[in-house]
Length: 301
Image 1 (cartoon, rainbow, N blue to C red):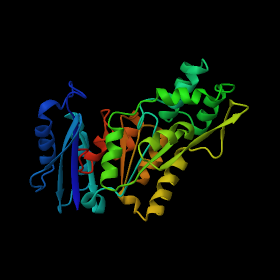
Image 2 (image 1 turned 180 degrees about the horizontal axis):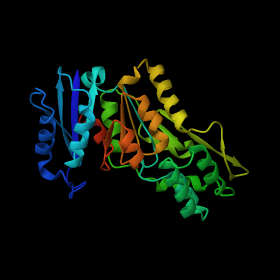
Image 3 (image 1 turned 30 degrees about the vertical axis):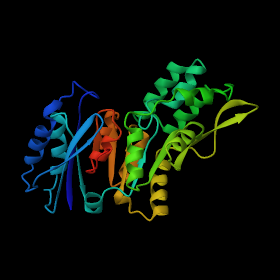
Image 4 (image 1 turned 90 degrees about the vertical axis):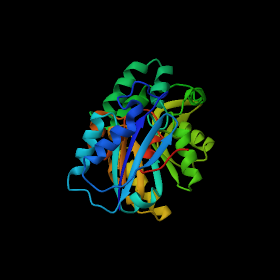
């Protein structure tokens, strides 16, 4: 089976979108250029986004998928091509990054701001997300700036965290269809675990902060959750569930997410850095995380 899915932002989420109110026509025109007998599309939707999806037995010509994605992007449309069981039955597991994907901020940047090192740490974070510095090294350097902060700042940061628009809708839609959702993060369990618990998400992996005498030591505890660890976590969760990785959908924004995106049946660059957009098999270019559902032919409502 072959599925071609498109999504685009709609007001009020992005009233100036290039897709605009005629997004459906533009999406249909792009897909029609593939020259396949696809039949009528099925609409998908969520708050602030809409989409069209086609399911067919036809085969897409070699190399046509990337070309379709480029043409769609020129029209303000995000497009994904899926095949096999993922195309026919949808995802059996969804895994997302957390910082700047499931939440709007980088948690370490919020912590660093309380240590008076916000700008310097944000600059290192940006280098790491663009793939210009090794993630583990960037984490070590950023954590050092937190040494001596009282552990109570973790509660302050948790209160400041905002979900990415559509994150709660994604979690609810997946729960309704019985599809597990996991969060894997280069951030910190002290922030991610309580957040996940509020949404009923029980699969979480993140770094742990070392605390001594009520203060952060400037080090992490345990193995670092780096790019390779994210991919291993996806495979481990899939194995626990008896799920073929080809039926996993993963989403992330930074270079340290690339191995995880490559390990999934569909890897989605979410509002991502250029390097990630170039290497991922699909993208959502506007800030509605539940639009990831539209790329596999599902709605969020």
